[in-house]
Every structure is written in structure tokens, then in C-alpha cells.
Length: 402
Image (cartoon, rainbow, N blue to C red; front, top):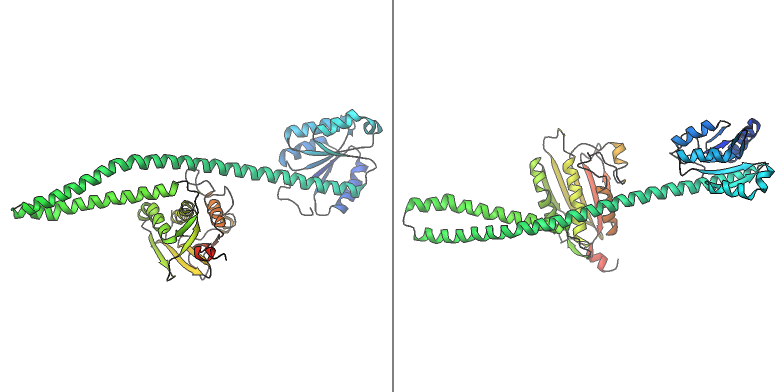
């Protein structure tokens, strides 16, 4: 516990006593035993109240008798400002030492320990270290619980969206089936009419205008069907682990992101440098979600960019027993302060409407759940693209037990 926390404001611990001589000794001895920790030493209760409003992680060491004021009452005031504050009470008052009710009151009001004067400074230093560790553990645990809660809320929202999408897909598919069937029937009947038609101009109109228009309409319906299938696969709550053809995943991702790619006139290329089919083992829906998220982030990177020819390149290759999938874009370099936090929960540079700060966190969880990982490489003098590199064990090697 020799390092100073990023949460320090006025110190990690605060000693409050009405005797200046005691404070001077406390400063000298605790500074000696705790050289890596910042301490505050004061006889003014108002100083402690100010510190409580700026740093909730301070450990207080308070004399029970502060002249006309009671140290227990002072800590009650501190606790109203900082409810999770903790205190070690000290006293040389034999009345307090022998008063079981007073000792119980002190400990029940947030006191975690008490010591008697004259103080054994090395023992107090050890207690300060231990209690500060417990305070850090408490706060870190609460932060992790809060993060997990937010992620569960987000996951619940995604599940709700998935239910809505499934319903929409079902409702759209029904009329789409009729439209497609009617178009194909009309096309078939039109070909029969054309065969029996003796008017050259009418046959030319059918061949050059009506039939191509119907074919385009049928093609459009099929594209909508493919999109709906991709949506269903994307939001389907699959728990089954299977062998996954990575090229099939990429085709779904391409379908899901096609609108935004075309909207921004992005050149999207896919290169498979391996001469064999590449299969991984995992959850198909989760992998679609992960790759789609990376591609969408690459698309978003071009917003406001002055790049003339926008490119997103996806490269697949085999590296021993792993698939290496690199998704790169030639958008702007990611600033270092963003790059350092890009995989941190709830960190986002997007607006509330666009970003939750969980996208890349979930991507990393998915990759690690498949036995892989993801890393980001920024632009530099030799590399003029931003790369997200996913490494996933190949199914064949996994099946062999490697």
C-alpha cells in the first residue's frame, strides 16, 4: 500500500486531534512508517468536513475528545457528507476506555477500530495500511458491480430489441412472400403472353421494359429476404456452440452494414489469404455481433473525415492453429488518450444516441469466450491504417484437443 491512489485529493488518511504536540508527533512517526502515503493532520473539524466532500476514500483517525467537541459527533457529520467514510478512534481518556456503551457507540457509527494513547505508531501504521486496502477493495467492488449491472441492463435491452426484430421480421415476411409469389406468377404469365403475341412492338415492350422491371423487383424482394434473415441470425438468442464458417459470418456482416457502407461510398474489400476453408468454434450470433460492431466502428470513423477514397479492408489468414482476422480502415488516427481506454467499459466518444461505451467491451468478451482476443494497432509512419486484429482458435485444431 505504498503507492498513492488516483483518488487522492488531500491525502489518504486524516488525523484530527486538538493537541498540536500530538499532531506533530503523528506527522513525524506516520510519515516515517508510511512514506508512500499522503496524510493530513489538523485540529480543525472544518478541514475534515471539506476533505469529506472531495474524497470519499479517506480514512479518518479522530480523537474521541476534541476539546469542547466530541469526536464521535464530528464523525457523524463527516458520515452525512461521505456515507461510506471509515474511522479509527483514538483516546487517552480512561473513562472512554472503561465505558462499554461509549466504545460500542463509537464502533457502531462507522468506526472500524480504536486505539489507546500512548499510541504505538508502528501498529497504527499497519492498521492504516490494512484499512485503506479494505476501503479500496470496497470501492473497487462497488464499481465493478455497477459496471456489471449496467452491462446486464444493456444486454436486457438488446434482448428486448431482439424480440422486437423477430416480430417485425415475421410480420414483414408474410406480405413479402405474397409479393414475391405474385411477381413470379406475373412473370410466368407474361412469358406465355409474349409467346402468343404476334405484335412485334408489344413483344419488344415486354422484352425491354416489363420483364427487366419485374426481374429487378424480384431481385429486390430477394435482397430484402436476405436482409431479414441476417437480422434474425443477428438477434437470435443462440446458446449452441458450433463449427462456424467465417466466410458465412462475413457475408451476414456485409449484408447488415451494406446501407451505411454505400451511404458513405466506402470501398469494402475482403481477402482470404488462406487456401482452405476457415472454421472456428463458438456462438454464431455472438460472432456476427462482434464483427458487425468492429465494422460499424470503422464506418463511424469516417464521419467528418477528409479522406478521398474511404476503405475498409478485411483480411483473413491462418497462423498456426489460429484464425487471424484483421479489419482495417484508412480513417483518421485514434488519439492516444482514446486508444488507451478503447476497451474500457462505458468509455465512448460518441453521442448518447450512438454510443453506450460497451461495444468493444462486448467484442473482447466474445473473443475471449472463444479462446481468442482482440487488439488495436494505430496508424504510424509505416502503417497508414487503423487495425483491429482478432485472433480465434480454428475449429479443426480445437477438435484435435490442441
